[in-house]
Length: 122
Figure 1 (cartoon, rainbow, N blue to C red):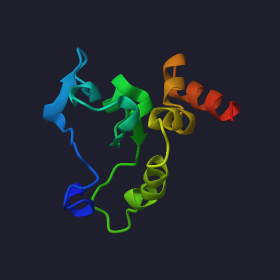
Figure 2 (cartoon, rainbow, N blue to C red):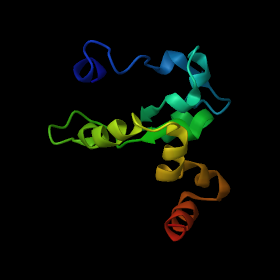
Figure 3 (tube, helix red, strand yellow):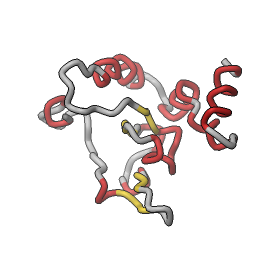
C-alpha cells in the first residue's frame, strides 16, 4: 500500500515491519521508534491496525481499522486529512494523545471500563 501511496518515497521515510519489532515475553510484536536514528519522536507517527504494535510510544500511534483487500475500504483515504494536519504541528505526539487518548487504556481494568471513562472525559 505504501508503494502505491508514496512511490517515490517522498513522504514515508521508514517502514517498520515484523522484523523491525521487539517481541515481548507474551509473544506480542511491538514497534519501537527509537531504532530510527537522527529523528525526534515528536516528528514521527506509527499507523497500524494493531494498537499494541506502538505500545512503547503510544502517543506516536495512529490506530486504523484493518484492511482486508476490500474494494470499499477507505480507511487510508480518511486518514489523509489528519496526516496533512500533522504536517503543521510542532509535536505530533501531543496531538495524537489528545485525539486518540490511548494512554487512558492503561489506567483501567478492561477495555469497556476505559471506553466508558474516555467517553465521559470528552
